[in-house]
Image (tube, rainbow, N blue to C red; front, side):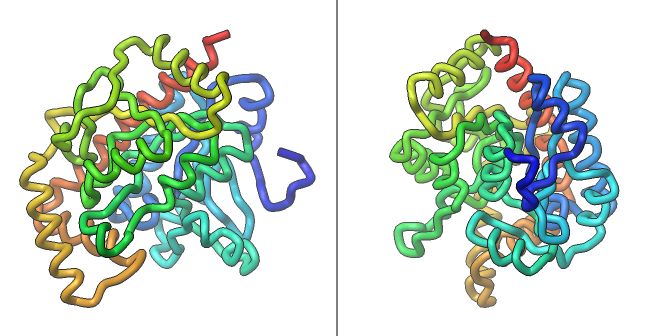
Length: 307
């Protein structure tokens, strides 16, 4: 990335880490705004960065601040997002208008991937990726995250897809796009709040050195897209998958009946599920965010250790 590119601002810490070959882990910022309630959202966001540092990597949270991409948001910028619920959620399609308007934007995975790729960051941590929604055969509701996976050489460490998505169709779509999905020490594709979605990971690797080599070789032979690493939430913090899926289907039906559409659907349903589970999803969300960051730091360090 050129220092003359005024649309991107790297923090001194992130710029120094990239220049010296230190491991860096990218983070999105839409979850800070539209995920957990304040002040838990701020506390969790800062604890995620502490977790990455404890794992020997440098965190690089990505957001749009005053019409510029910031890669390595400051604590003050994170607090601004955590306390300003009007900051919009920004996907890759929204970037141009938001930059042109000079406003703020909380990046989703698709937008964070673009900025991380421009900066040369090799690992991104997110609790749950976007994917294929239930009923997509009729609605064609497929997250832009999946398309962006084909455009950037980044290892995405996650706990599967968000719980309101169809895991089987998401895995099928990832296979079509040629995106590897590897479970780290787990056989099943996780389901965000739950240990298992009921679908198997296509592959499993238990050794971090072998995982890092698999990622590097995937790119070395000419593949130009992402490499998905999955690992589930701690079983003690997890919610039963059947309970979560049944609840989400009911809330989706209620959202349709209420006329909720587009980008408003996901936060509406997650809020309703959180209320119905009396906050258990918030505790699970925090747990999976932290565990995903810990693994992402380990993966980033292992990639840098490989020749």
